[in-house]
Image (cartoon, rainbow, N blue to C red; front, side, top):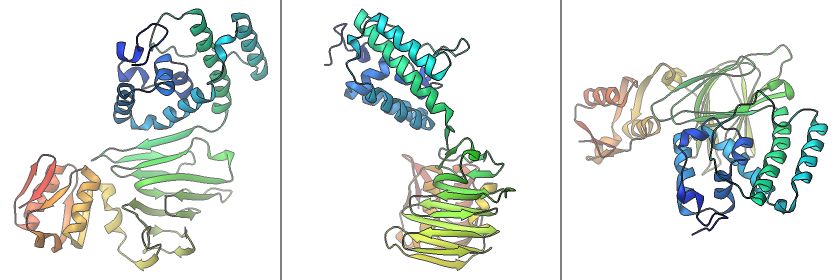
Length: 352
């Protein structure tokens, strides 16, 4: 057991509700002693608490990482400072950044309230002061925004330049809140999204990063899918340039580029673009698609693995339109297409 100044590990004594931290930024988290205990002396109990927090609020991952960096960087001999030195440090920081570290209109978030000993208070005060200065510098830069979707959810996001991104289920996009600070507009994608990119008067390039390749455009519409060690880019209109390891290509409307992380091969071919972007309208347009591929779509979209009781069914190819508003809708339509029964059991979809 971790022993604190109070003789009891405070993490084991009291756990605040997750929602207490839901609106915290990185600086506020770093100044909270409950959070500091976890970073400095993690226990299985505290690890489970913060893992559970991220399950409820996955979009807070960036703030959590930033807060950890602040706490780790402030692991100094701060408790030796007197109150007078703390106040002098506060005054110097405020004079440097030309603003108070705790503005009058700053929101007060009630986190853990505990009695501090004199040394503990000074240490916490130093963390708050220094993290406040770091926070001031941090928020002068464009804020890094993260949007994510859960299983069964799609989301439309308006970027700072007016471009529109439709995020598919189980996907994530990251970008800076202000594109004007750089000479290129950049986003980072995990999962799948459809991009409608606005052409700017200054012809600023727009770049989509995945873990495999980069897609560079000026103004166009295209779909990017980055799943299962394969990235697919399907161009609806305009023109895009693909940069993959050791190879690049340019796409024109109707082209699809596919890159495999396993083979490092970049291929290109003509496709029906609507087959790859119909998910935006909550439908799948299928044309001779194997049931193995359809099963993978179901798992990617709803988080439910598909089990084939008859392995031969996995080789079947189907065509048609499937409404994807819910897993129940998909199941009902699939039963009609396959002329067989489907059963949801123990969070698995079993095809009889």
